[in-house]
Length: 471
Ligand SMILES: *Cc1c(COP(=O)(O)O)cnc(C)c1O
Image 1 (cartoon, rainbow, N blue to C red):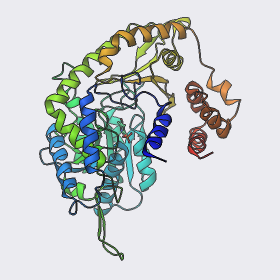
Image 2: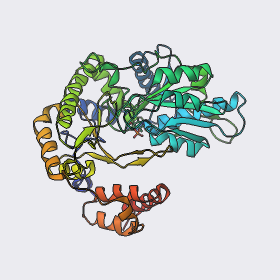
Image 3: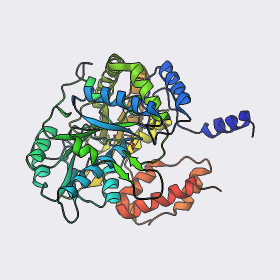
Image 4: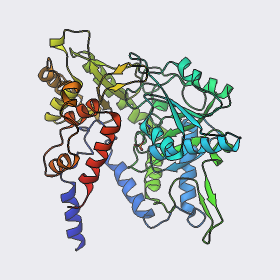
C-alpha cells in the first residue's frame, strides 16, 4: 500500500471511534482543550520514535527525560527525596508497587504467601497484581454512604503477612479520598508499606485547593507512612496514553521494584519496569507536555476542572430521582438513584446513561457490587470532568436534566429475572457488536449484576477475544 492508502485506511478504521476531543466522552479521555499541546507532544514523539528505552546508558535522553519528570513529580507530591520511574500507565505503576512490596517482604524474611490489604473501591489493577505476583487479597468493604472503608477495619486487617496496604486518592468508582493519614500511620507503626493510588488524582489534586476547589485531606508524601504513590501522566497530566509516574519515598523499597539478571548468555538485563525493549515515544510526549504546562499550566487547567465539576454536581443535585454518591472530592462524580423519593420518581443511572448517550454524551456505567459484609453498593453512572467540560456545561446540564425526565419512573429488569435467561453466547454478542450494531452496555452491565463474578469475567474475556479476532 502507498503511504496515502495506509493513512486512508487508518482514518477509515478511526471512523467509529468515540470522539477523543471536545468533552462529549466523560471517561477514558482527558481533554485539555489546547491544540498546541497536542502538537508539541506529536513532535516529541517523532523525535524519539527510533529510540529504545531499554538502555538509558546507550540513549541518555531517556534518563534525562525521566529524571526531569521525576523531579517535577516529587516536588508536586511533596516527596523531596522520592525516587521512581515513568511507566507505561497506571496498571503498570500499580503492578510495580505491589511487586516491590512483595519482594521487600520476602527479603525481610516473610514466609508463605504475602497479603495485600485494600478496600472494595481500590482499582482492579491491584487484583491483577495479586493474581500475577501470587498474593492473597483482603478486601475491606466500603461504607454505603461515604464510599470509604472504615479506617479501623483496614487497620484491623493488617498483620505480619501483609506486604502492602493500598489507599486511593481518590478512588476511581466514586471519587472518594481514603483515610490516608490514619491508615498509612498505622501501617508505618507496623513496618508495612502503604501505597497511595493517585493514578487519577495525582496530577490534579495538588492544584485543587488553590484552584478554588473544596479543601482536601492530606494524601501525599507529607503523610507519615506513605511509601509509594502512582500518578498517571496520561490522565490529568494531559499526556497522550502510555505514561504514569511511580514514586517511592524509600530507596530500599524502590530498588525492590527492579529486576536484574546477569546469568544468561546475553547482555546484562536491568529492568526498572515491566517491559524490556520499550518505546521512548510516550515518555517523550509526557516530558514535552509536562515541560510545556509547568506548574502554572496545571493550575490553570485545574481551575477549569474545579468550575466544571461544581457545575455538574450542582446540576445532578437538582435532578429529582438522582443523587451524587459518596463523600467525593476532586474531579470524579458518581451518580446513583435517589431512594428517598417515591419509586415513580426515581431515575436509574444506567437508563439515564443510555438516554444521555442518545443525546450525544457518553457517561460510564458501573455495575452494582455486593460486598463481603452483604451490603450492596448500587450501580452508578460515572463522570470524569475535564477542562473542556467547562465550556460544554450549557449543553451538558440540560442534556442531563432531559435524559433524567425520559428515564424517570422506569426500572431495569431485575437481576433475578435476567439470571433465568442464562449465560448468553459471547460469540453472538461480539459478532452482533462488530457488525455495526451498537453494543448495548445497559444489558452488559445488567448481565454482570445477574451472573456470578466468575461467569461474567469469563463471558467478557470470550467476548473481547472474538471482538478483536480476524474474520
Ligand atoms: C486509571 C486508574 C488506574 C489504572 O490505570 P491505567 O492507566 O488505566 O492502567 C489505577 N488506579 C486508579 C485510581 C485509576 O483511576
